[in-house]
Amino acid sequence: QVQLVESGGGLVQAGGSLRLSCAASKSIEVNIMGWYRQAPGGQRELVATISPAGSSRTYVGSVKGRFTISRDNAKNTVYLQLNSLKPEDTGVYYCNLRDGGVWRTSWGQGTQVTVSS
Image (cartoon, rainbow, N blue to C red; front, side, top):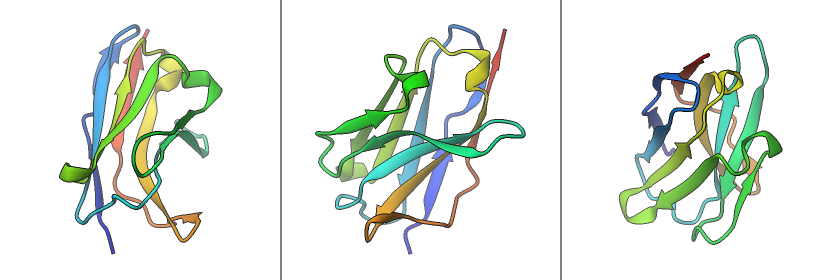
């Protein structure tokens, strides 16, 4: 099973930027990949997805124009660039992959993003 390890989170002021990385232990070149986030006390939500070749991307409305998902299949890594951060972007960010048409149900440890006002 592919292991996913997220990194790059931190504490940043509103308006700042972060770049999250998700390193996979095996090739993910055939998988749709996604980034989720879970705010304190909230449910995990899907914020961005990217197709296997990177040609198609989707975003939840609240992050459109501020976040950018990308991937480097040669490095088995997916990225999420977070710009113009807002306090409501605070949460734990997780990456995941689609396998057989469904999102995998196991999760990594995530990476904490905290945006101060």
